[in-house]
Image (cartoon, rainbow, N blue to C red; front, side, top):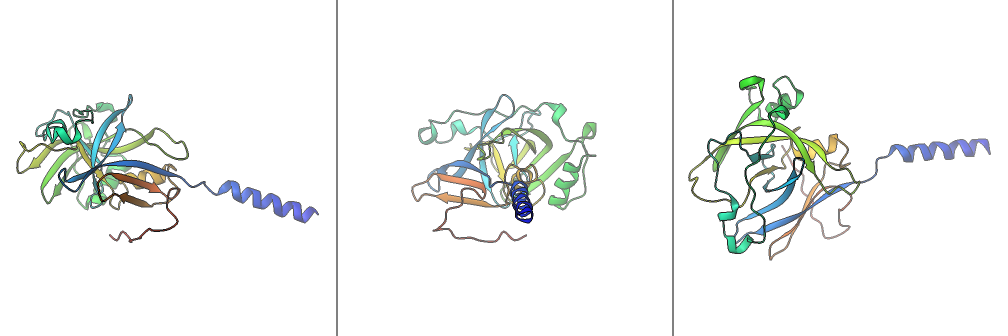
Length: 239
């Protein structure tokens, strides 16, 4: 009897050590045509303000157009097909608190440059500056930490996330308006949103999934609690 009680106690202890499943689910906006973007709304800072982020599985860093002040910024999405997205509230530039700027001596900065595979670059006041080149342009900014209010199934909210404050956007034509305020980096690396959520226990597994309707919209999820039991196609995310 004593042995059985000891075994039962051990099993209960193991159950307590196993973290519960958790996921973050975000609604997708947009379509392939005519908007040409799929994006999510992220509520950032305190008090939280909504921003539209373009989904990019090829990028590691999440960043927003930022009033640092901004040297070159694309026009706000409120000028982009207002008839199609007129129900969305226009968002201005993200205004950072400089006390939240990441220093070059912090591990987050080292992780960023390891992901970018570039030598570290320090800016004024020892701030962690970066430059990212894309096929259609570039972004220069400084790494910032601020709170993201995320709808996590385990109730974790808000979450402190490191992301880019992009104050100089390089693009062929800055007069062409964009429907988004920045990039949601969902690639592989230590500074990706998924990696940060996993390290903070907001999600229990490094899983990314999406469901997109043929008519547009859909949802994006991180973690494993919302994975459907059927009708899912899996693809490994290679480096």
